[in-house]
Image 1 (cartoon, rainbow, N blue to C red):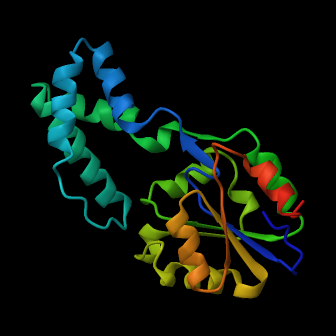
Image 2 (cartoon, rainbow, N blue to C red; image 1 turned 120 degrees about the vertical axis):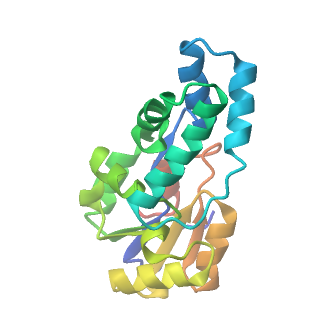
Length: 214
């Protein structure tokens, strides 16, 4: 990978998969909780499959997100014949409660925030915003742009342009880091240098050092 020698002033990051993640995935969170309740894996998987048949519309408010997940978990609960499980699943299985920082991230953000403006561009539901407080990393970012609040998603060009405007940045002085290649390409389509983070090969600290950002 080429080292960056240009006058970079702004670094944008994706959130999930780059800064933090849920290391126990959604289906497994539901499955483990219900197995502990005494249900069999086969009936749980059948209930999850039924819940996934629901159409997911574009969600812009927590109330809409809560309604969606109550309906999703409610379907699972109904399929298992115990509707009272709905709120328990919402409380314990919702992704926001399970997000954890990758180990190197806080140190990287602390160092980078002293040299650059930092921003987030993420395809996410409204509750993603709370995760930045839960993990104590909001303080590192000048702007956090979530698709739920701007009503447009990566890799479409609009969300990148919104982020640039909010941060007062130009494409020539900005880079964007994402773990999904099509989102990296979306940034490049508007003129931002796109960087793909493949966590199977490298972590964020190694990446920014390789790029000569630290």
